[in-house]
Every structure is written in structure tokens, then in C-alpha cells.
Length: 384
Image 1 (spheres, rainbow, N blue to C red):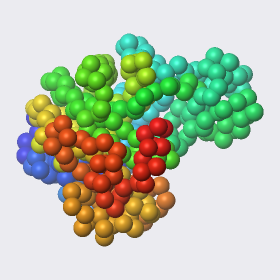
Image 2 (cartoon, rainbow, N blue to C red; image 1 turned 60 degrees about the vertical axis):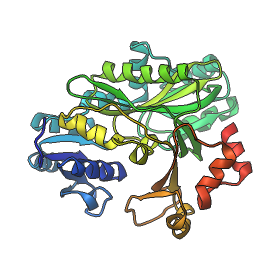
Image 3 (tube, rainbow, N blue to C red; image 1 turned 30 degrees about the horizontal axis):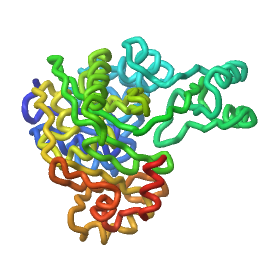
Image 4 (cartoon, helix red, strand yellow; image 1 turned 90 degrees about the vertical axis):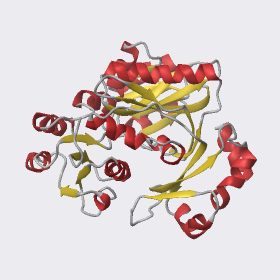
């Protein structure tokens, strides 16, 4: 267990590093961010910052020597760099976990090895295997890069044989994975934390909706039957134990119309779909992660309110910032990014409701105020 004022090193200066550093400060720790720039969101709120490349041995050694334990806020960092850091300081989650989450082939193979269901898939290494994948999965299917994809990037929907070649050429690096389209009723996620003593804690299942490949809305709790929610949490628990995880893990899942729970992706760090915990729980996802990394006990997650999280995506949502700050019930969180580029996550808002009082579509529209989508868009989004 780390002592107060110990230094937690966080690789990555984005918004997840920022909110992790703020959680660490509440627990009496100091944070040292390894960032690309001195004005990155995480660097703005940390005790110290090292600026440099994540694959530069000299930078990594200088960073490690200044901290007591190391974690990371996103997966797209060189695993070899994490290996070097682990020779100098404890690293949680481990490089083994990072490698699995970085590669969709390894991820799916691991999940199947521990008895977790995933959508049918095939590895695509060349045009011949692409054709075989199309024959096995049928159209339409999704072709994805095995690495470096996020927020809808690095993937193509293939609707017929005429689109195979273009999709294959457009995606890099290779190999790729082909995934069958799942007829699902809902996409959900579970934030699961595992401590150094093996304690596993799961937050409530979250219902997620995406727009243009980017998470738009999260609802907590997910509006599913209790038995399905229990199955989703148990799936997340099995993955955390199977990985020998220390830290927090986001597990994205599809709930099939027949009651199937299929894991889509795992992310060994705080997750966008867990941001509702910042205002609806005494201990949010970021504190759980810091507690696990620092060796502190993990309390049972408690949700004192139902919640909705809405992402603020540039530039349109940020144009509403004056109205957002004046709207009753909207709890805003901004990430300190200077440029509101199209599709860039600039912040989020949370809206709280009494337990058991999560509203329907029209009530949701009223609660979101200036951020509400037109009713037709909300209904269409739900159908998607």
C-alpha cells in the first residue's frame, strides 16, 4: 500500500489521465504525467510532468525514476516501452494485459480461451483469407484493423462482394479481423476493478448509444433484466480474473435479442462509458483505479442515483457551452482541450435522477435541455 504523498506515474496526458490525477489528489497522492506536451489535459492538473515520446528509453527512465508506481490512460502506447518501465517500477495493469487489449486477434483468442462469448470472427491476412471470411460470416460484416482503432476509426462495413477490395485496401496496418454483425438489442459496458489482494468489484451495467462511431449517451443502470445484468457483471469479473488484472477494466458487450451476452472489446483503463460514476457514486471509476494501482482496499461500488452521461463533442456541442453552464441539472466536466475539432471529445455532462427514476425518451430530452436531440433523432438512435 502506497503512503500518502507517494507519486503515481500516469503514461498519457489525455482526459482520462487528467481525471485519474484528480482522483489521486483526493486520496492524498501526487501524480506525474508522461505527456506529449506540457499543456495536455492531464499535465494541467498534475504535480509534475515529463514531456517526451512514449518509446524513448531516456525519457522513460527519467519518468520512472520520479515515481513510485506506474499506470496508463490509453492502450495505444508501445508495449516495449511498458516493459522497460516495469523493469524500474511496478506497472499496473501489466504489459501482458496491455498486449492483449492492443490487438483484436489476441483479445478475441484470449476471451474465447476463458469461455467468454464473442461474435463470430475470422483473421484476415490476405485477399484469400478475406474471401474465406466473407463466405463464413456472410454479408454484411465489419472489417477492422487489429490495432490502433478507436471511436469508429480503423473499420469498414462490408455490404457485398463489390466492396471487399476497397475495404481491404483502405485499412492498415494488417492483419485485419472480420466480425459478423450481431443482431443486438443493446450495447452495454461494465467497469470492473481488481485490487492487488484479488478483490474484484463491478460497477452497475451501463447502457450505451453511439453516434457517428463515438459514444454519445450512457445510461446507468442499463435497462435490462436483472438476470442479464448479473450475467454481464459475471462476464466482466471472469475477464478481470483471467487477465490477473490490477486496476480497472472497461468491458464492452452486446446484449443479443435472444439474451446472449457477447463481449466486443476490453480496455484496461478508465472508460468513457464509466464517466457517470463521477457524480452518481461515492467512489467513481477513477478512484477505484487509483486505489487498485496504489494497493488500497477497494470499496463495494455504490450508486446513490440513476444517471445519464452525455459526451460534449466538438465543435457543435461546445457552441452550447453558455447554455450548458446555466441549465439546471446538468453537471459539466471539461477536459481543458483548446481546439474543439470535429469529432473531438471536449468534455461531458452528467444528469442525476433518484434511484429507479431514470426517465424514458421524452423525459430524457427534457432533462438534457440545450443538449437534447430532436425527438426523431432520439428514436432513430435507439433503433440503431
